Amino acid sequence: MKRLVLVLLLSALLLGCAGFLTPEIEPTPAPTEPVSTPVEESVAFSTPIDETVAVPTDVPLTPPPLPTPTPTPTPQPPLYGIKIGIDPGHQARPNFATEPIAPQSETQQVKCSAGTVGIASGVAEYEVNLRVALKLAALLEAQGATVVLTRTSNDVNLSERERAEIMNENEVDLAIRLHCNGADDTRIRGAFMLVPARECTATFSENVRAAQAIIESYCAATDLPLRKNNGITYRDDQTGFNWCTRPVICIEMGHLSNESEDLLLTNDAFQDKMALGIYLGILGYFQPERTE
Ligand SMILES: [Zn+2]
Image (cartoon, rainbow, N blue to C red; front, side):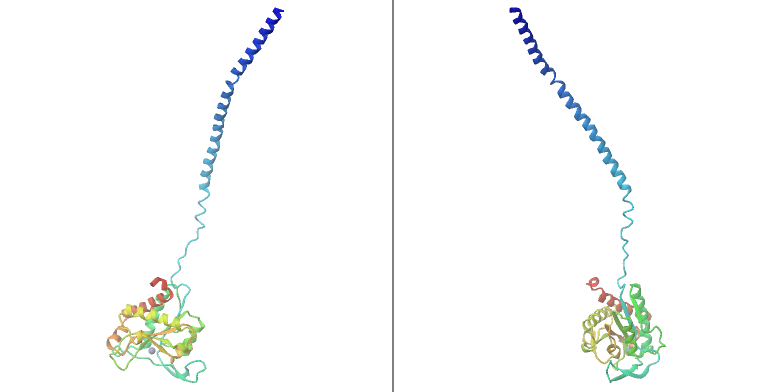
């Protein structure tokens, strides 16, 4: 009996020891395994990083074609798309036949009067008007405007009504008639504008705005004095206005009846200033934000 008990006790002791020993040995390798795993994982992470580095290097190769389609800005000249009508007043041979002064009017007026002549130079007004018109046309065209000239020669036969109709047919955005004045009093000097009277036009405010911009700029460029009512005179007796359905004004560029002014108006270099002054006024009228 005693032997059996001893065996049992021994075996129990051995099992018990084995039970205590096993848990102590096993936990040790367990922590080592998880440590090795994260190391492997971190290696695995390094691979995707390499891939993401490889992707950007490919991307920059594709963008270069992108800058090419960027819209190429084509800067338009300031008067692009604008149509200006220029009517150099008179012609070499006047036409004293008559035509109605206005649509449905019974009042008749001479088709094309002779105009004035330089008191000192002897140069005819129609000649000065054409020279300035051609200079003005070149300035306007250089800024992209389309220019409609009623005449490019002195040897024409155009009535005032026909000149107005040229402006209407071409649907000009602004018609400007160029003239020089003649006064009985040879001391009178200066430039001024003629504008259709309110009842003679459908574009009264536009006409006034254009006239103000141009006469101001013209006097500044030429240093000629401003004449008559702040430079603007309203007229209802102009065939060239009454038949015109487009915005229209007329500039009296100075007095050929005044000796000193005549010598300026008929001078080629001074005519450059005259054309420049009118051109700058037209530019200011169509591009008010540029001048303000
Ligand atoms: Zn005239």
